[in-house]
Image (cartoon, rainbow, N blue to C red; front, side, top):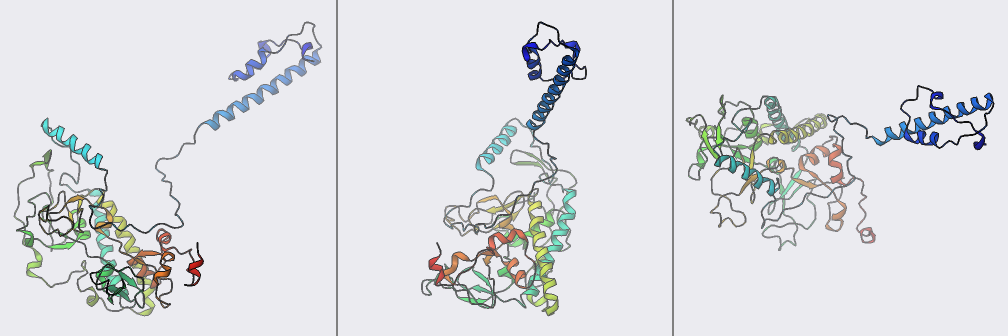
Length: 447
């Protein structure tokens, strides 16, 4: 019946439809005109049908327009990544090769070129706290909390070692948390060939769980650099404690210079550091054997064995302290500079490394014993020291034939877990808790 439909003029449209899409207009223009006039009833039906058609087209166009736009996300809300089922073990870096740079080398070269260009023009380098020697006020409370958690961690591990047995290899750095040592043949010690790569187990200590990473304490990090001849004039304290001191923690035994005016630099040269001040004598010279509460020295003797009913509570507190220290150190290292040797385990907290020549790692003769300084990562300042995860500490020892079915965990996490603490979800993928360990005869049938 379309060839008998009357023409519809634009004046007969509903004025409320002003933003109609072009597709509707095209449909209206292509409506054929009829020559003979129709009845009023047919005209009303046509107008009603046209209005319904325009409403439908408008709804479809608005829906398409809204669906084509991406939903706006709040930038302050951080999307959490899902925890994987299993992850690989941390890679073992070769000793005859330099560590990879944590920052891409091209970015380091680009920053060096920009600093050199400013220095050639005689323009000072723009420095912000703490790069200019001033403290970051927002990080001072965090530094105190990290130091307190570090003390809780040392006390908790020392107490748990009275109840949880720990063994260490006398020929290599392997550590095992169980009633007896494992039988996995992965010893790399000097006499491992005589033992067919089996470990030589001895009773472990707190230094096997919390690897002692020490750093020189500096009264003024921007002052005189430590030379090889003056290296014994400075105290050696845990790197975590030195990082907290430079972040604003005041310890009477280890004072630190607090600047009120920023330093000024042109390129790599410091043009104004506020003069050199006389540094106090090392505290350790007068008290060589005095234990402190933030050091692992003689920690097993300082803290007595806990009661059996208090062990799960101490284990959970130790686990929480370990997580807080690790996250806090990571936040402090984003602002405060920490250097690490690219060849050995030496760490230095400060804007530049020291000049002591005691690096004995790969090709140290070419460097005259000097360290190859580069930016440090959190695992070099606070190493996790991963050990094999034991599901049944009282069961049979781990064997080499089933090595690929076992998981690993940081030593502190393994000790706390065996003492009754709840394991955080981020450590479970590496522990491989969802893998069923077969019998030795069944392992040959596993693909």
